[in-house]
Image 1 (spheres, rainbow, N blue to C red):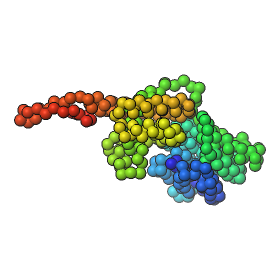
Image 2 (cartoon, one colour):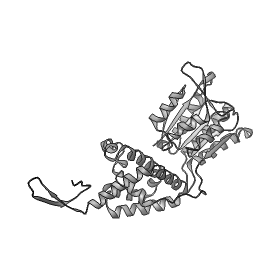
Image 3 (tube, one colour):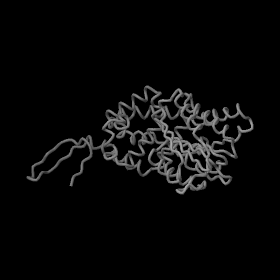
Image 4 (cartoon, rainbow, N blue to C red):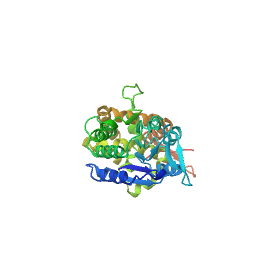
Length: 340
C-alpha cells in the first residue's frame, strides 16, 4: 500500500478542490487502485506540512498551490498571511524523510528550483519551470496519476512512466504548456557505486521477515521492541521497496515466506539470496535504490547483521553452566547466550 499525501495551500483564494477531486478519481479508477491510499490536507501552513509528512510517512507527496519566481512555495502563516517557504527549507524537510518518500510532485508555478533542491535527497521530484495555467496543471495531475495506476513492464520506472503520461496529457491539450513540467532525479544508473552485498541484505531482512510478512497482525506490535526501533524502521523501508517486485515472482515470494518460517535456516537464506540477486539484476533502478538505502545506515545494518550472525553461530554451540550448588548443566543454545 502506497500513501499519497496531498498538501493543498490556498493563499490568495486559489481553489484547488477540482484538482484534488480529479486526483482521487484517477486513483479510484486505476488498474492498481487497491495499492494506493490518499490523504488530503488543505489550507496547509509550514508546520502542517512538517507534521503531516512525519505522521503519515507517505511514499508520494503532492503539493498544489502557488509558487514564486525564486522557487519558493507560497503557504499561509498562523494569521492567514502569505508565507514563502524557500527551496533550501523544503530540501531540509525532505532530507529527514528520504527513507520512505519516493516522489514529490510540486504542482505550482516556478517550482523547479525547489524540485532541484529536494532531489538531492528524494529519488524523483517534479516541478514547473515557469508559470503554468490552472487547466494545464490539472491535466498534468490527471495524466500523472493515470500513469501511476497503470501496470508497468520490464525495467520501466513507475514514476518516470507517470511523468511521461502527464506530459502527454498536457501536450494533447496545449502544446505550448507541455514543456513546463520537469522531472529531477538523483538515480543515476551510469554512476559507479559500491556493489551491493546480497548476503548482507538477506541476513539483515531474515529476523524481520516474520513480522514484515504479517503486517496487521498482533505480532507486528512487538517488532520494534524485539528488533530495535532503528532496525525495524530500516527493514520496513527496504522491504517496502522490494515487496512489490517480490510479489510478482512466485519463486522469490515463496523463498521469502520459507525464510520467515525459519529465519536461521542456511538453505532458506541461500535460496532467498539467489532469488533476490536475480530480481535485482533484472531491475537496475530498484537495485540502485536498495543499494543506497543499505549504505545510508551502515551502522544500523552492521549491528543487526552481527547480532543475527551470533544467533546462527550460537545454535550449534554447547554451553556448560555451573549452578549455585557447583553442579553442571549442559545443553545447546537456541539463540544468544551470555555467560558470566
